Structure formats: C-alpha cells, structure tokens
Image (cartoon, rainbow, N blue to C red; front, top):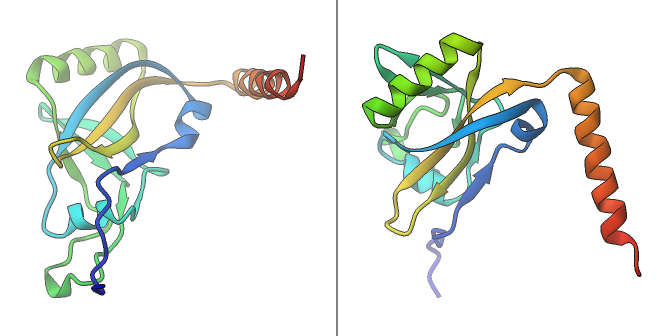
Length: 154
C-alpha cells in the first residue's frame, strides 16, 4: 500500500441552494480555465459553489466566488482559492445569454461542477430568475408533499 491519495474520477459538486433561491430557465455546459493545482484539489472534492456567481465582461464569461481549496502537496505553486475563473462557451451562446440577461433582468449562476469522462472539469451554469418569498414557501410545501407520499405505504 502506498501513502498517495487516490484522486476521484467521479466528482460532482452541486450548488444545492441554487434550486431553492432561483427558478432556472436555461442551463449551459462550459469548460473552466484552471491553473496549476486546481484540478487536483477538485478531484479531492475541495470545491464549494455556494457563494459563486457568473458575469459577462467584454464578451467573456467569468465565475467569481467559487472556492477551490488549496492542494496540500502544492508548495509555492499552489493556486489562489477564490480567484475569478474564465468559462469556455461558444460566442453564440455568450451573446444569447447576454441578450436574455439584459432583457429580463436574469442572472447567471453555477449549479454543478463535475469531471467528464475525458478528465476535464466542466461547470453547468443556469440562466435563472430569483424567487420571491412565497415561491420559496411553495417549493418547501411541494418537497414536503413528495416526501410524505414516498413514505406512505399502500
């Protein structure tokens, strides 16, 4: 046996609050520009999407507030934990997102980070509209009803 840590091949990190806080209209799949030891930290599940959000600047999409923890074996080449990271989308997709965000006052939120079968980190982002308080109550009520129905035995 070796003391090396095993890197996980199936990493899926979800933003659980996103479904509760926002009503998703569209989802997009994007690549992420990573530096140095970030992919190793992602494979060790040291990622949080809770405070992250996306924005468009000069025709490019960036994610801000996504926390990727430090890689322990990464000496002075380690990465910055909460830096802005560029997302890789097609120009047509970016333009479509930008137009919809301007029209309706929508926001762009990261919903899921995973590693695909080729070993590349991918981020699923959603074009979303914020929920009002009564919408959140409805979501809670629906979730409770589904839980009760699944617990009932016929």
